[in-house]
Amino acid sequence: MRAAAKNISVMFLCIVSLFMINLTSLSAQTSEITDGVDYLVTTQNADGSWGDDSTTVGIFSATVSVTETFQLLKETGIQSYTEAVTWLESQELTRTAYLAERIRLLSDNGSDLDKLLSYMDELSLWSGYEDYENTIIDTALSLQALKAIDYEDTETIDKALDYLTTTQNTDFGWGFEEGDESSVFMTSTVLKTLLLFRDTYNFESEITTAASCLLSTHTPEGGFGTTPEETALYETALALRVMTKIKPDPM
Image (cartoon, rainbow, N blue to C red; front, side, top):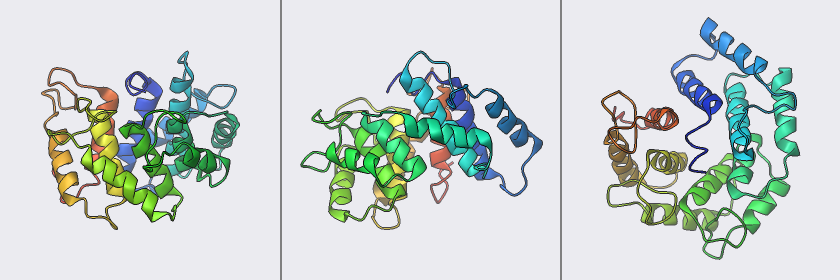
């Protein structure tokens, strides 16, 4: 998961596109957006996926990102989108993060949800696989999936959200697991999760402090990075997307 967050160029293109879409009216597609869609269509693999990474994580993550871009651009009627959904639905997934992403993207209330819930431990937390030790990343992504399908078990959601807020580091960020050093990727991921539940839970303190943590990682180059000397492309795009959802705007 750590490597996948940093080395997928197609995913970075899509995340930047998603950020720009938040700032641009979907009803007035610019030539740049049209060209971007054309680029994504022409770079799609024959099997409906995207990416040329040698590992499944790279291809799956890139395909999720491109498919979500099509959804936000309302390009769900094109053949490339249909082929992407078919590819995603055909994958035999066992990892929590993959299941959560497919549920969030395709609103799967069936076998994916059953499997995801079976991975949950007695504390309503998730690990990467069934019967593994719980992690912040898998719990955050699982909560995003449950929110996407309006999952109604509030007790489960309460416990998982409490875990996220109590594992916030002293610098107000998060790592992949409890006790890990804070990273831009994980702080942005958990912050995105908390923002999804902002209307029903009071997370203003956690949101404000997490935003300050992200701002502290702003690099001289203008991006974001876990260290001031290192601007990370994917993390910068992800952080920007999250920051645009915080009101009042801390930027």
